[in-house]
Amino acid sequence: MRNEWKQVICIFAVLIVLSCLCISVVSAHRMHVVHKINEIEIEAYFGGGSPCRDAEVMIYDKEGNLYLKGVTDDEGKFGFPPKIGMTNR
Image (cartoon, rainbow, N blue to C red; front, side, top):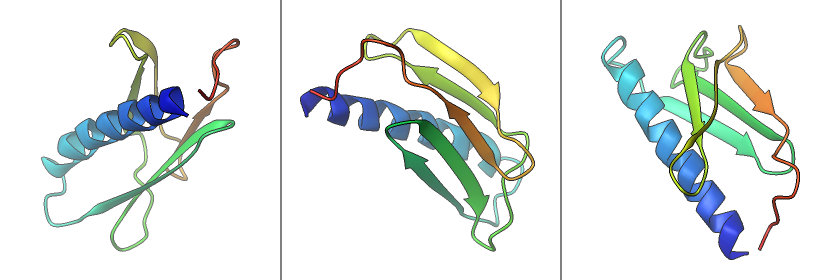
């Protein structure tokens, strides 16, 4: 459970950075982010419901090392399978 919270906090930190990057472009909108833990999928969209397309996503491990980076698709989604051997505890 403790590692799961660390992962959630790490993803949340990445999403905050993403929202800060998007704010400079569209400061009049707020962005909502939805994520799943089993198959990690991030969905980013603005307050009006439009997806955050081509947003840069950077995922870090619990030691702070860059684990993966990519961009959201046309629907504002970015997904990846969790690293083999990661536990939920």
